[in-house]
Amino acid sequence: MPEGPSIVILREAAAKFRGKTVRLATGNSSLDLTRMEGRRVVALRSWGKHFLIEFRGFSLRVHMLMFGSYRIDERKPSPPRVSLQFDNGELNIYASSVKYIEGALEDTYDWRGDVMDPSWDPRLARRKLKEHLDTLICDALLDQDIFAGVGNIIKNEVLFRTRVHPESTVGAMPSRKLGEVIKQARQYSFDFLDWKRQFVLRQHWLVHTKRTCPHCGGPLSKTYPGTTRRRTFFCPVCQLRYGTAPAVRKAAGKAVRKVAKATPGKAPRRSASATHMA
Image (cartoon, rainbow, N blue to C red; front, side):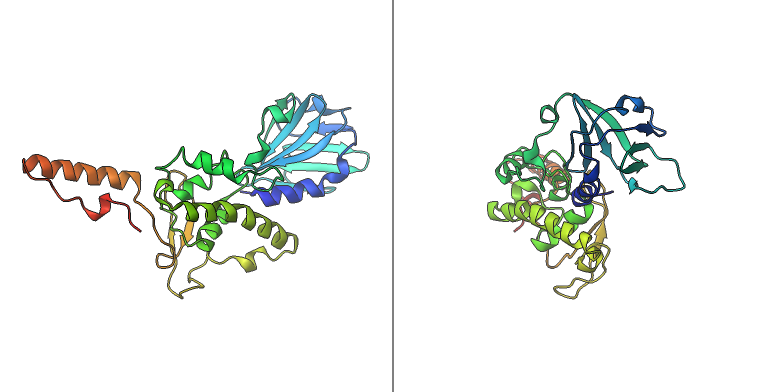
């Protein structure tokens, strides 16, 4: 799935179509693509993983999902979802979700939530995280309402940079550590962008798709945790786990209640799994 930095690169590559008029709009989308014909592109924008082609009064939103791609001034053998032809070239979008957004984009998008936008607000991200204290940090980083643009690669690398176990719960993390994750979500996104422009992104991966920890030399773990179930690479030694998953706490709580019921009058000892771990 293309992540935020890749969409920024698409936006930059398509910049030559800003101010140009769509001469022909075709594709296998169920949308009425002819609506864009004869309309001038007001702006080309991005929000997180969304590529936005803005016209006066409406915009076309492109989400590339897992396998979306694009071509500028060339075509793939497969039919495009949307093909826009201009006097100075053409833009072809493949295997993507497309929809129209009516009205001003500011009515739909909060640019403060995009980790790559100049309006990014880390304090807003922290406030939103506080509404999800039982959420695993690996899920929180992929929540586009909090970290628009962050994808699975960025998630894995940010958690390794900050030495945080992916199954840490947001509420159990120290405030300082949570701040590091928020900061690195933006910093790594810009590093990603620079490396991708230079075609060296994979060379800089520390844990994503790797087997050995570059810090301690031990084996990396690969799991599919949380509700997102996305492939996660991490070092079980170097990355500290804060708290326990809600399901584990729930099971531990049941065990404590069961013991208490079986031995009335005695206050059972709480197991280690029922408490936050440093």
